Structure formats: C-alpha cells, structure tokens
Image (cartoon, rainbow, N blue to C red):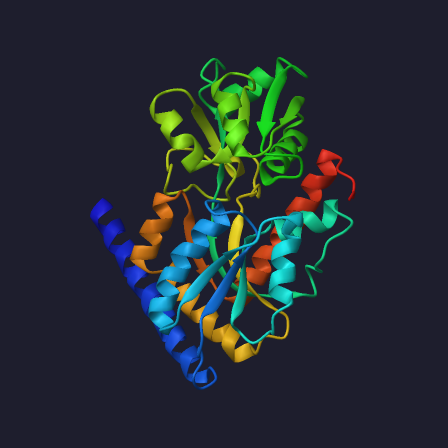
Amino acid sequence: MEAARRTALRTLTALAAAGAAALAATAAAQAPAGYPAKPIRFVVPYAAGGLPDTVARIVAQRLQERLGQSVVIDNRPGANGGVAASALLSAPADGYAFLVTDGSMFSINPRIYSKLTYDAARDFVPVALVARAPLYLAVHPNVPAGTLPEFLDYARARPGKVNYGSSGIGSTHHLTMEALKHDLRLDLVHVPFKGTGQSVPALIGGQVEVLWSAYPSLAGFVKDGRVKLLASNGGQRSAQAPNVPTIAETIPGFDFAPIVGVLAPAGTPRPIIERVAAEVVAIAKAPDAQAAMAAAGIDPVGGGPEDYARAIASENERMAKAIDAAGLKRGE
C-alpha cells in the first residue's frame, strides 16, 4: 500500500512538472522577441534573511538559469512596504522589475495604516504564487500541555493569565493568535516584540508561555526539548512537521499560513507576465527548488496569476476578520 502511494506521488509530481514545462514553453513562444534583453530585478520589501527574501533568492537563482539573464535581489525594507513599492513603481512597467513579498502588503497594511505610498489593489498585478510558510504554535516546556486540546484546557482554566508573544502588533503571528482567541473564546494576554529575534528568546526564557513562529526559528529548540509544537496555522499539514496537526483540524477553514509570490507593476505587458509566471511555476514544482524551500521551512506551491489572485483574495478576507477580532484601528 505504501509503495503504491509513493508510486502515485511520483507520477503526480512528474505530471505536474511536465505540465509546468509545457506551460513555460508556450509562454516563451508568446513573449516579445528578445525578452529578457537585460537583467531582471526582484524587489523585496524586507531585509535579507526573511521569508520573502529566502523565496526570492531560491527563485532568482533558477530563473536566471532558465532565462539566460541575471536576476538581482533588491532588498528595500521600510515604511510598511512603501520603500519597496516606490522603488518598483518609479521604474517603467516593462517586465524588468518585480515585487516578491508575503501577503501583508495587501491583506494587513492597507487595513491598519492610513498612509501608504502604494495602492494595493491598483498598483500591482499577480504573477505567480510561489509558496506558503505555516507558523507553529509553540509552548514553553513548563506549560503542562503536549497537545492543542490540553493547551486549550490550560488556557481556559487561567483566563487573563497566559501571556503570548508575537513579532509585533499587526504581524501575522499576532493576528493568527487573535483569530484563534476569537474562534475558541480564549482570554490570552498579548506581549508584542520587535520581530522573532526577540519573541522566540522570550519564549525560551519563559517570559511568555506561547507564541506562533516559523519552523526554522523553532526547530533547534524543539530538538533539544526547550519548545513543544502543538499545531500549525496552515490549511493542511506541512512536510516539515507532518506529525503536527493544523488548527484547521479543530476549526475548519482556519488558514493563516503566510503566502509568498511574485507581482508586477500594473501595466506590465501580459505576454511578459505569462512568460515569467510559467517559469516561476515550473521552478516551484522542480525537485531542487522544492528541496531548497523545504530546508528553509517553506512549502512550495506553484500557481499562476489566477491562482495567486484567488489566494490574495482569500487571505484578505481572513485577515480582515482577524484585524477586527484584534480591535486594531487604522492609524499612521
């Protein structure tokens, strides 16, 4: 039975790769003659080392091999994505500059910041959905809970006394917990930090009892017993931790795993968007790229413009509800 399952999986993988290759070949034939004739730029609205930057570098390395042109990573952190947006939108929409980002620029920032230098709905068009990266509900070993139901019982018995950490107000880590609190009627106290570089050490040190964080930030601590993983915020279990259940197994439809994709400035020629989309989808489905993402705690997806547009719309809907649950008001 297991051998048959593995054979079926290999067959499906091969068919997906073949389909992606055929799509890339078709798109290449439709793209403008000579494209690309110069280096392509991937603008990333975060510093090096974060999730979108990691995805951008994995894709860029392989895209330049496929296109025969350099793909340069341009990290532009700051102003809630505004610095990156300005850098991208000040350039011609000619297919030589793209944005690689998570969904926060579109699903969170427009709802909590009144002054942004970009219009999420007007200024960009989706090119390709590359990956998802679920966060994990982690607890300190002193918390007497080894499963999600046990933690829920522990928290409900201590209303207003269990502290949870996050990487900042309005972060996916924060909003995931607020959505969980709302859906399960939990009373937890939020302790925001400036990034996971502060929140994870606070968990290890016992300043907070629980938080959501990415797998790479937690894996070493899980291995040496300083953290317990109880659940993930993705819609389905991740290959990185297949034994860890999802919140969706308790709350159907619960899915707050960050998505990462490639977008183009509005006005970019459609044939170029289709060409780059096809190449990126093929990369996301290639075994070497999937292995590189897996090593970074990332689940590859590989979807074209329509798939990415649907994913953005779905994330927008979920985040709007979570922001309401958190009581966040639009500010500066």
